[in-house]
Image 1 (cartoon, rainbow, N blue to C red):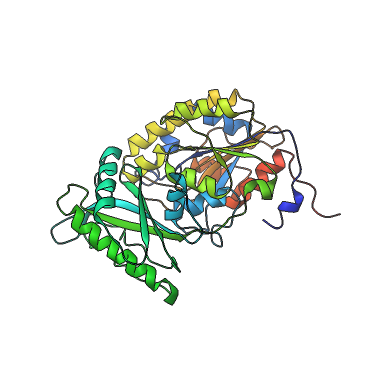
Image 2: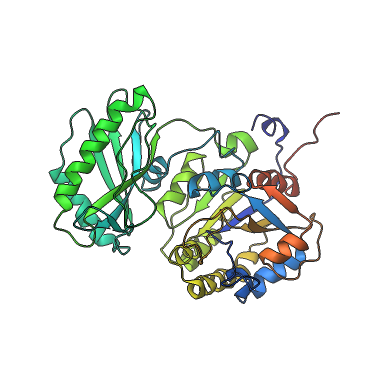
Length: 400
């Protein structure tokens, strides 16, 4: 950041970062095609032919990223030194008026059996209106000592809790075991100053379990991504660009707000996102547009459904390209192979298009061609923003 900021310069160019969440995948059987390679994607293939392709590592080779650090890396922030817990991103995403020193955690409503073992980490992806009812029930029933708490619905099985009080810190583990058939983890503080918050979180979980005991399927909560609210440098300050974000899920709106983007309101469907992009095109220099369902179907382990979502994503490209962006980058924040039903460490395919970018031998957009024919090569995701800015003529020469 300190290196790039002095190089920024003004230009009358428009940049688009189009993210299909969890885009990267794996074949169903060794030697086969990935979800992206299986999908019929004439518009992405055309972009690949006209641009240059490669692979991105969200954090580092072999490291499986969460969505928060993966997105921060795409926006040019070091995902290790700038790591932020999912709870803060969720709180920002739902528009909660976060204050300095608040500690937020993401909630998954989940299902546990009579022995307290997790049988479904997402409670069957309960409907958002069920989530809202449960949140309201907990607001009325839970009373904490040592801190206020605020509970907000995100979407489906996801919610966020915000703790507010004196001297609260966030060095706490997740209670989500990430697998079924075992009990949730207990809350443990990693340092002395976080012990107060650990006790408060433990009390919150115990009371919540009692309140939800007779509910089904959402009869327990898992807490993830404890994060204390701190200030971030904005993308406008660093890169000199005005930034608009279009996303339907709160977490992604949250990470956009964290780095100073304006969140553009839109309807719930991908086509609504495209309309919002058209309507705000004149207002911003840089747009981040997020497509969620590729990741959801990967986490469900539904290979064919992820293929269909990729094809839906591809169908949006013609209307987007009519806007005449100067620079377009299409990639995922990370890989979510259906065969793993989870995020993975595999690098994500990327295509970068502009009139100043060299072409390569790729004639289709897929993992194998990006790896073997892509001139861009393999990079950390943090390199994408400088490449986009350079192609938008928004970086000065370095040195004499």
